[in-house]
Structures are given as C-alpha cells and as structure tokens.
Image (cartoon, rainbow, N blue to C red; front, side):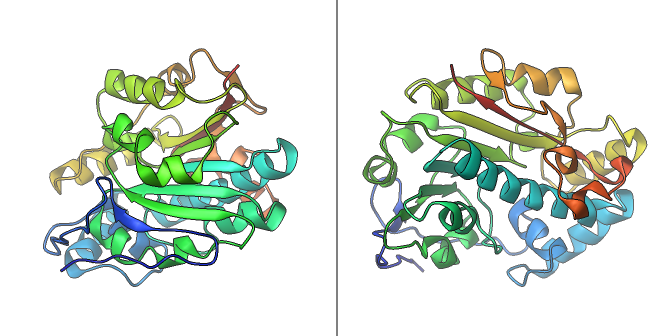
Length: 285
C-alpha cells in the first residue's frame, strides 16, 4: 500500500524523502509512541497494542493524559508566541505525530497567514493521515516529509524543505516530545547542531522532553514500562536539558515544565507533579 496526497491551494506534497511513494507497514501488533499519544489524547488512529500499552503506561504514570495535553498546549503557545511576538514565519516541526487540532500551522497562520511549515515524521500512520497537516492558507504553505530525526541532512536536503522554507531567513525548529526516545545525549546534541548549522541567525529551537525532576518515582516506573514495551525512553534532569541549548539564547522564562511556559489560565492551574515534561525555547545568535 502506498499513499501520496495531492497538492492543496497552499502548494504542498506528501512523498518520501527521496521523492518516491512510501510502502506502508503499520506494524499494528507493536505499540508506537505516536499512536499511544493519539489514544491518550482521545484520537482514533490507534490499535489494540497501542491501547494496551497506553493502559500500562498510565498505570505507572497516572497523570500521563494531563502531561500529554500540557505538552500539546505548549506547542500551541510556542507557535503563537513565535509568530506574534518574534515575527517567525517559517517552522520545521520534527516528530509532528498524528494530526491533532490545532496543528502548528493552524496556530501560526491565524497570526500570520503567510507562515510556512514543514512537518517531519517517520511513522507510516502519520503519513497516511497527514492531509490535515497540509490544509495551508493560500498565502502560506505546508509540506510533509517522511524522514528520521537521526538523519538531519536527509531533512535539510529534502525537496519538501527546500521548496517550502528559505534558509536565509529565520526558521523555528521544534523537537517536541521526541528526544526522550533518543537515549544518547551526544546523538541529540549532534542532531541539533546539524539542524541549526545552516539556519539563519534569529532561528529558533524549541524542545520538550521527559523529566523525572518533579515526580521521580512515577517517571522511573513509567520509563521502565515504555522500555519494556520496546519503546526506548529516558528522562532527563534540568542540567541535561540545558545542555541541548548550549550556544543559544534562551527566551523567557527559560527551561520550565511545559505548563509553566507563558501559561494560560488552564495551564496555570495544573500541579507541577502532574506534568512530566520540560520545555524551552532559544534563539540562534
């Protein structure tokens, strides 16, 4: 089975990194992070293995739904803030996951209809359901790329990115709820370095990732449950997350739990122990 979406009014495409249709193997008998996330957020693009894994993870992490929603809301607040307060008009969202409204381009294009977004994910089910990610305004553009975060040059050199984004102007790169699946800090740092190297000064890096700093026993049990299911996951303390932003200018309020980053009324009411994610946003000098 293959899939390829036709361009929309904003000028978009859904093809693999080398320009060929993707042969899809959903591996529905194995839980996948994107589908587990979708299920916990109330989505429908998941399978029994994902639902069973979600139940097991939630047994160890009782506030997992709250934390996941807080992370999703963090994405929306970051996109709005960058578009409205910092004039960012280009976004590269790596590890986009299954479409869940509001998607990043919807938030950014409400502020600036000319905003341009490239979504990147390697999960075949995300590709199959990517059309909501491609509903760009006529003034802007969106594209979807099937690629792996661990191969940043494949992302940077793809036709989708080259045709959608102008790297001579600032780009906001978001790695939200994805680097916790890369246990080696050195690999994460190298990926970030490669992604940011060709980007213009004023470009942005946004990261959210799992931490045990506020609920150590729960997160220790939860990450062990993820690993037992075949999903590699690590939690990181504040110092480790700070290191991912080395050489960049952290924007206010720095690295905080995701619901504490420019919180709205709903986010401000959440208890810190109910959120398992640090988030931060920084500017390339």
